[in-house]
Image 1 (cartoon, one colour):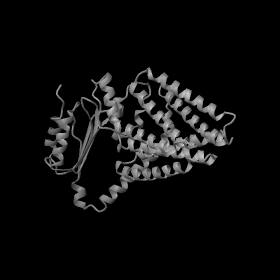
Image 2: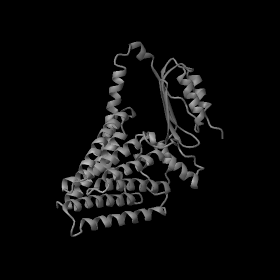
Image 3: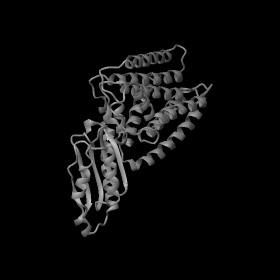
Image 4: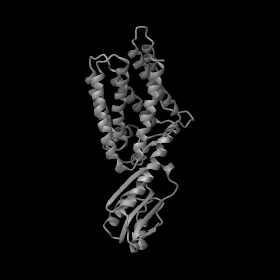
Length: 371
C-alpha cells in the first residue's frame, strides 16, 4: 500500500483538486485574475525552492515533494494561459475560410507565447535537477505538458467531444480553432504513445531493485499517464467526463454573483432617489448579422456620449466570423467571440438616463452586415 496505493491516491487527489482550483479561478470575474496570478506566482516560487531542496533526496517524502512541486509549476503555466496573461499574438476567432497550413499557423499563433513559456519552464526544471537522484518533479512537469499538448492537438484536428464549455469567456475565440469530427489520425498515435509511457512507468515501479521512493515516484508518473489516456478516450466516448468539475464551476458562479453584488453595493451604496428614478433600461432590436467593425464604431460613439448618457451597453450579436459578446461600461469596451451553442438569438441591452433611443436604434440598424 505504501509503495503503490498511496501514490495512486495522492496523484488522483492532487490532480483533481488542482484542476478544479484552476477552473474555479478562471471562472471568477476578470478583475480577480491579477490576485490569482500573484498568489500562483508565490506558489511557483515555493515550488521551485521545494524542487531544489528535494532534488538530492531519495526518500519517500522527497518523491512526494518533488511530484507536488512539478504539479504546482505546471499549474502556474495553465493559470497564465487560461487567464489570458500568456497566450499568443492572435486573440481573435479564426475565419471559416482558413484551412490546412494557414489554419495550423494561426493555431500556433493563438498560443505561441504559452508554448515558449512552457518550453522554458521545462528547461529550467531539468537544469535544476540535472545529474541529481530525484528528477520526479521535472518528469511530472513534462508528462503534464504532454497531456495538455496532446489534448490541444486532438481538438484542433477534430474529435466528437470538444469540451468547449470549459473555456472561460475571454478565451471563447479559441473554439474557432476546434473541429468536431468522429476521429483524426493523430488520436491513435497520441493514445499509443501515452500507453507505452504508462507501461514503462509501471515496469519501473515494479522493478525488483526499486527503492520505495523510486517505486512511489514511478507509480505517480504512471498514474498521470493513465489519466492522460482516459482523458483522450473521453474526447471520443459519449460520456460527459467534465461533470467531475461541476463543483468548481458552480462554486465560481456563486462566488462571482456574490462578488458582483458586493461591488455593485459598494459602487452605488447611496444613490440619490432622483438618479434611481431616471435610470432606464432599454433593449433595441439588433440586426440578424452584424458587421464587427461597425459595431466597434458604435461602441466608440456611445463612449463619446453621442447618444446621451448611456452608462452601460452589453449584448450578443452574430458576425460573419462568429457570435460575439460585447460590453461597454464607461469608456471601457470589450468584445469577445462566443461559440454558437452558447447563443440562442441576438440581444442588446442599454442602461442610462435621457439617452436618444431613436438614434441608438438607428446606429445598431446601420451595423447590419452587407449581404
